[in-house]
Image (cartoon, rainbow, N blue to C red; front, top):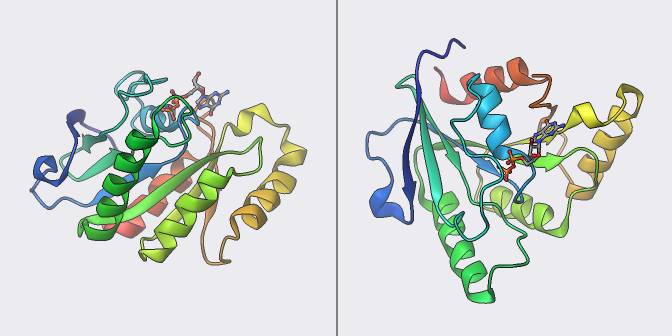
Amino acid sequence: MKITNAEFIISAVGPAQYPDDGLPEIGLAGRSNVGKSSLINRMIMRKNLARTSSQPGKTQQLNYYRINEDIYFVDVPGYGYARVSKQQRAAWGRMIEAYFQDRDTLRLVLLVIDLRHPPTADDCTMYDWLTHYGVPVCVVATKADKISKNHWQKHIKQVRSTLGLRPDIPCVLFSAETGQGREELWDMIVKHTRL
Ligand code: GDP
């Protein structure tokens, strides 16, 4: 995939602000700080388009990035921030569920988890939501550079069993640091969007 253009479009707080040009969307879900922004930046080979380490509380929107006039990456606000109130969490849940349930242009969600640790309860809930709504999922196990190569398979196995991944759901090893997994992920995206 040759990236000729990538730009931030909007932080949408609700459906009225979602783009209406019908381009296919790739959602990115995962807990805060897991590495979603870094993944987006690595995928498009830009250092800083997606903001890394965003502030809690400022992440209650869907951030739309348009790539090549072809697709959107949609950064779904991270879950698992202890500092947000119960009310904010509930509002976040409603927004995300509505997005997964109703967004016709959503083609694939990359569920980003940290390869170093077993998926959290929030990761499991997110996976269950996505499968419940019939959204195609690809798990991305990031920060692979932080683990020695001979432990990768053991960790992948743990990710698959903790999430209860169906055998047909792919799980891609990734590193925003080294670029590992980038091509595989682009192939996956192209397959789901027929670019
Ligand atoms: P976000 O909150 O999910 O968008 O997470 P960020 O992309 O801001 O990443 C959180 C932190 O993890 C930052 O300090 C990143 O530099 C670091 N990080 C993200 N991805 C990787 C990776 O693949 N390898 C390493 N070593 N660090 C990473």
